[in-house]
Image 1 (cartoon, one colour):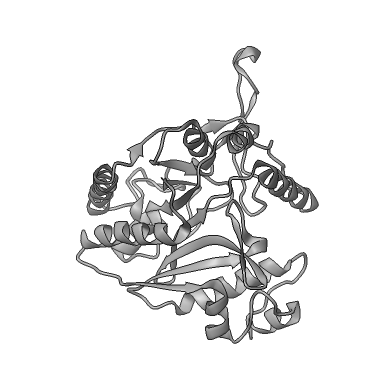
Image 2 (cartoon, rainbow, N blue to C red; image 1 turned 45 degrees about the horizontal axis):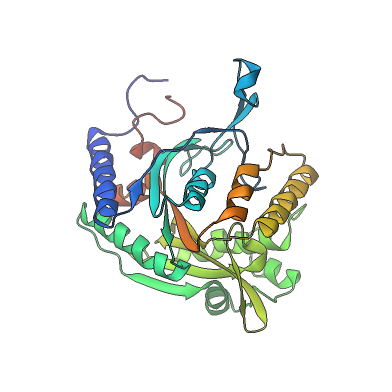
Length: 323
């Protein structure tokens, strides 16, 4: 172990410049910066995200003893939206257990923002504008291209991700060998994205993939698209690097509760911990939650692209091994 930083001083200075740029970008657009709790009484139910938890040792009247380190600021930001605050964003640290490696650090920085009255397509444009400004700091440009999830798989792999049988998805992996035990249909679609599609995304280009299968809706609205249901969701890539995940936000508390309970069932089937459902969020959705779109962007990943490095440690003053 070394006491010295994992990032160069130039990288540390670039992070400061990026943070200043982000704040100026939103100030010009009258989007308010806020701060929300890092410790919560409820955790993230997503079966693919593991949360850190801890026990509060103070007086019992203070509330629930078990607390969860946030994996994103999404739920409290949505409570602010329901209360009538308007367009807002947060730039801060989030935490995910078990994610450490070349592109992951258990503690990282997330930028998340919400726009009232917008859908996911309009938000793609603003997200691309912010990334263009950020890349300009290092003298780079990246044109934006958009493609639907269905068209991407059809054009690149010759399959319909919405209708293809499981055997066809498995065969499309080619000579990539994966243990199939416990994998569901969406898992195979994700494997095709990470192993067959992402590595071929053109470097120097922003690619927005939108309108995901309804089964991958997370917290997004669903929409009829011909004879199919799609989730109004997008992911934004710079070359093969995923930077952002956004939604036209679900505003139906009943539907959101059902999704949370479905997540918990899957967690239990996998033997994973099941955090408490966020009742405060559900109450906010049931109150006066506005039509809006929101997106979460990993600023460490963005810095990786700006520094042209494959190591997230190169963007962090002290990575997990040195913290």
